[in-house]
Image 1: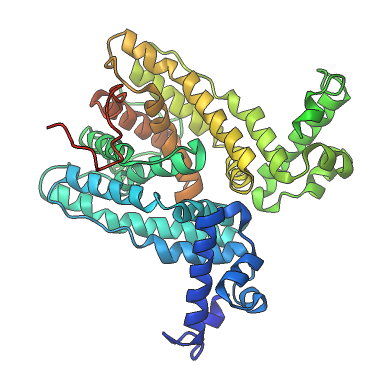
Image 2: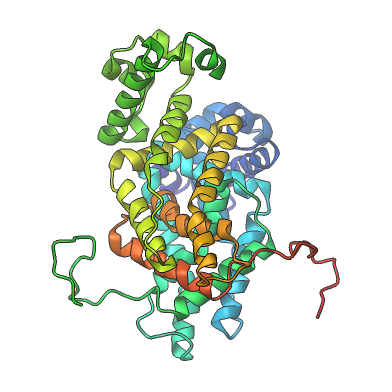
Length: 219
Length: 219
C-alpha cells in the first residue's frame, strides 16, 4: 500500500496523489463526524470525496487502512504544553486531549483505529508505535519536572504519560461516557499525585521480573 | 436476537438451547485464544462447536453478537477482594484483572467486544452498561475504605474504579503492550495515591458544569 505513495513521481507534495489523499481523508473525517464509524463505507467515502471508488480501493484496499492513515494524520495535532510546572503541564495536556475528543469525528476515529488494529496485525503495530512515539514526545513534560526537582530522577516518564492518556480511552471505548474539562482536570490531578507518590518508577536495571512469584521476596 | 433466547421453552437451563449456547461460546473462546480476533469467522466457530452454521446465524446473526455474548459471560469472573485495607483491595483487584488478561483468549475478547461496540450501537450500550455495573460492584472496596476512615466521605467510588481499570485497557487496546503483576501493582499504587490526594471527589450537588466556560467561577 505504501509503495505507491513512496515511489518517486506519485507522492510529490501538491501533486495529484497528494490531492487525492487529502480529499479522501477529509471526506472520511466528515463522514465519521456525521454518522460514526458503524456507517463508514468505501461507497460513502468515494461519494463524498469525488474520488473514484476504484482509485480508493487500489490505494488503500480497505476502510480500515483509510481510518489508520487518517488517525496518524490528525492525532499529531494535540500540542505539548510548557507551563512551567508539572501540575500545569499535565492539566494543559489533559485538557488538550479532552478538546480533541470533544469532536465526534475524533471519537469515531479512535474507535475506528482500534477496530483496524483488531482486524489487521500490521495496523496494530502502526497504532502501538504511534502511541509510543506520542508518549516519547510528551515525556518532555516529565523530564523538565525532573530537571526542576519537582519529580524524582527515577520517574518513569513513559508510564506517567500512559497514565495520563489511559482514562480518556477507557471513557471513550469501554465506559462510553462523555469527556469534559472537569474529567480532564481530575485525570491530571490523579496523575500528578501518583507521580509524586512514586507510583511510576523505572525498574532497577538488575531487578528480577516482578511477574513471577517464584523469587523470594525481600521483607 | 434476544427474543428467541428469552422466550419460554427455548432457554431452559440444561436444555438443548443452553447446550448449543455453551458449545458456541466455548468454541469462540478457544478460537480467540488460538488465532485472535482477526481470524474469527462464523465458519470457524461452527466447525469447532459442532453446531450448524445456520443455527448460529439464526440465533446470533453476526460474529460481533457472539463476541458480545461471550464477553458478558466471562467478564464477571474477576473476584471482588476484601483484604481489610484500600491499598490491599486495589492491589488484589488489579492483580485479578492482570491475571484475567494474561489469557490470550481474554485479550482477544475485549478487543472483539470493542469492535462489536464500534459497529453496533446496541452492543455499545450493552458494553457500557456492563462496565457500569462492574464498577458499581467493585465500588464496595471504596465504600468500605470510607467506612474505615481511610478515604474521604466524598470520594467518587465510580471514578476510582474507572481509574483502576483504565490503564489495563489502554495497554491492551492502545499501547498494545504486555500486562504483568508489576504493572498491576503500579496501577494499584497510583490509584491509591490519587484517591488519598483527593483527585476523585464527587461533584457538589449544586455545582455548575465545569465543561462550560461561560459560567462565572466562584473565587
